[in-house]
Length: 257
Image (cartoon, rainbow, N blue to C red; front, side, top):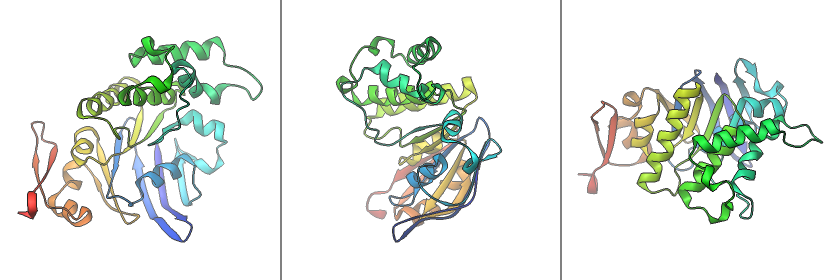
């Protein structure tokens, strides 16, 4: 569904990504992990076509560079880490922006577009918030509204950059459980960047570890989340052990002992 070949990005004088290759199959969840400054957000933006890059990005078997922005938006929905949310816009109208790729340049949203938006809000338990202003919402509610806009696009791929940023533990779980349910129900392909390594290992099918702009490990969570790899690339002392379901749980070791 998504494939990159020798993907490289230079921002100013700095090479942020260097020849990164990845492959995500339809219906799979890939979590991109790595220390701060590793290039995680830049990778997602490059796949979305928001930053100039070298190398190739393929979406659903088609070169992304050959797709018109409108066609790409029908394939891929993107939720940035810190989206600009107009505080005075209602929840419904903000989610309705997800239908933009289907509206003609001089047209207006159709009844069909509004019905799809209403259905998405219902699935996310946001119907009761439809008339509320975005600026009045809590952090967890705003995250769900951003997800609603992305889902209203009816794209086959969700690119979510740090979807749990600034959320407390309960809201983190709610958002990731929701993404997982929607992925399984609709056959969506999901790519997320995540800071929390245990969450990444708990929810994703596969992980891609970036360090200094390069892919240094990829595969099943148990193969990527090892004490050696995490210790080396995060400069952290950790103990990693299997959780109740066999997936790796990362524990910090105080004082490196």
